[in-house]
Amino acid sequence: MNIGESIRIAFRGLSANKMRSLLTMLGIVIGVAAVIALVSIGEGVQSFVASSFQGLGSNLLFVMPGNLSMRQAMSGSGVAFLTMADVAALEDERRAPDVGLIAPESSGTKSVTYGGEKILITIKGVTPEYTIVRNFHPQIGAFFGEAEVKSRARVAVLGQDVVEELFPAGTYPIGETIKIDGTPFRVIGVMEKKGGTGFGSQDEVVFVPITTAQARLFPERSLRGEPVVSLISVKTVSESSIAAASAQITRALRQTHRLAASDEDDFSVINQTDVVNIAGQITGILTIFLGAIAGISLLVGGIGIMNIMLVSVTERTREIGIRKAVGAKRRDILVQFLIEAMVLSTIGGLIGIALGALGSRAISQLMEDMTTVVSVQAVLMAVGFSAAVGLFFGIYPAMRAARLHPIEALRYE
Image 1 (cartoon, rainbow, N blue to C red):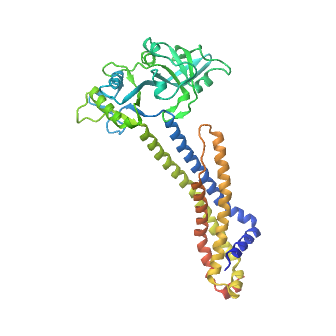
Image 2: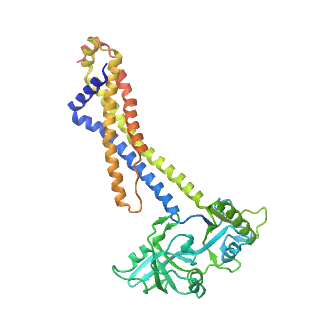
């Protein structure tokens, strides 16, 4: 049987029942569009997460209090903390020669007010090294220096989003006074636009000297009475020295925390590359999960195709009988109905791809920080799966049509 002729007959049959064909394809259209849109969102999230972590800076290690393996959140001496004593230990070149710059921070959420505006925002007490370690610099004004840190100056540097939320349009923030948890701070700088990172949006942060934060905003102390540090960002001397620096940090902090050989670490040293890989694995699983959910719509659409093809077999019973009577073989009837089912699903798939791509672009427009990615793999997967659905769900109706006895088919009313 000529395949081209079979496709022509299939299109003629579909055009004869336009509304029914359109409704039959609707499930495939929705399913493929959902697959394209959701997979593109998942891949966009992957790209966004990876770029966000890369934007933190290079050659980075993050030291956090507590054991992230969740096997031990308590040390032998009490609750796990990082303190300024730990920072001093890591700054000792004899203990950690592969450690370059260190940027400790004490952070938390506080209310910030200016005029009649009041917002809850993340406050980070940091040192001047923060801008170099995290590759994050002021756009206007300046960052505070060692003099402000030593004098516990009440100065603040704002993220871009904080400026937009607090100040009326057109207001120049430098020199203005804001209140953080009731304490006045003078604005000396506004940071460049950074966007989201693995540790939250850098544009929704207010930076103050770490000594000021520890004295006025975050008075929490360790059991030894030392100021507590939330996170220590470490920039190693080179990319090749990350592993050595990690080992040196671990050894130095175990000594500082007086941990016995049998004790587990009460801190965690996180490699930036490991964080990116873990985030990539999580978002990859999310992408597969979203695609699987959308695939359910394709299965529903396939069932719709099978139902309509069964109806078509019943309606065309006499036609099948006539074709068999004039010499059509069982294989010819089988191929004809399979092609019709695949044409339905393929056309629905192509329409779904177009709608999914449009939906993906619309999502990119709505979400400024994330760009959805319509990959070739997602398109090929959607088309292939839609054709496979048509083939799979068209087999039974096609076999039923092929098995009809020509005499019984001719007698069918």
